[in-house]
Length: 313
Image 1 (cartoon, helix red, strand yellow):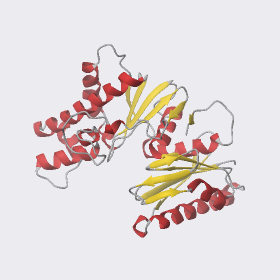
Image 2 (cartoon, helix red, strand yellow):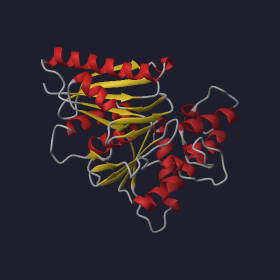
Image 3 (cartoon, one colour):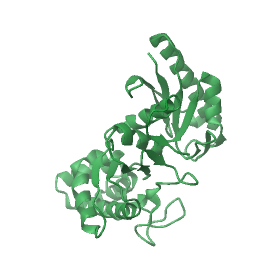
Image 4 (cartoon, helix red, strand yellow):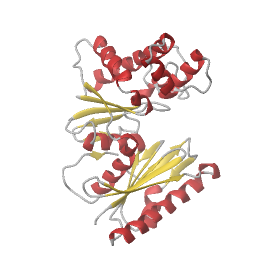
């Protein structure tokens, strides 16, 4: 069976899969990145993991993988195949595409983790069929992927979609990016966790606990939650004014709250729009498999000329 290798590299762990021609996950595995041993060790772990997957595929399916795709965090130069920078992994200017191609002996595609996840959501997930979409995962931070006419736009310098750094509260909380009042300082899962832990007096409380408290009618939690929803709505209205997406896909940890998030969020966005068209606001469909599936799609795109969505450098 023809298949490709897909790797989704995170800050502490790696998810991987063998992906069939129709996007099916044939085999899944996980490994640690080994980042505590430094950036060189992370690269070694990625190459070793890829080699394991190649050997497994060859044994299981009678032939080696036809290509590989890898999604990584940080700044990515997809055109040159270079992982330019990642604060979490500590690397700079790693020629990851060439290193993997040398290890595996097959073509390799390199992509940014959020845009790669957005590629999967846009092609086979919650955005399937939408000609314009915005994918916004709400996790430790907030990022975004802009889907336009069958591709995910990276921008001139690789920073397109960084909705988490739209300033929604001028003069507000300082952000590590150097600005103050950024969206991710108010509406990320980390921000809600921080706010709820302080209000509840429970240091180990998190955003999921806040959502549960909202569902049970706790007024303190409702206030924290509504402040996050309002900030998110402000950021989304700015984005939809600029991009006019048909669908906004919300993913990440905060989206796991379901309608506790989506009902007030849709209402808050609708209250704010004037001339703009209200997009569909929907939960992501692929969960933590989006990165692997997207990396698999990148790999298949190296092998086909069919009319599929592409991530542009």
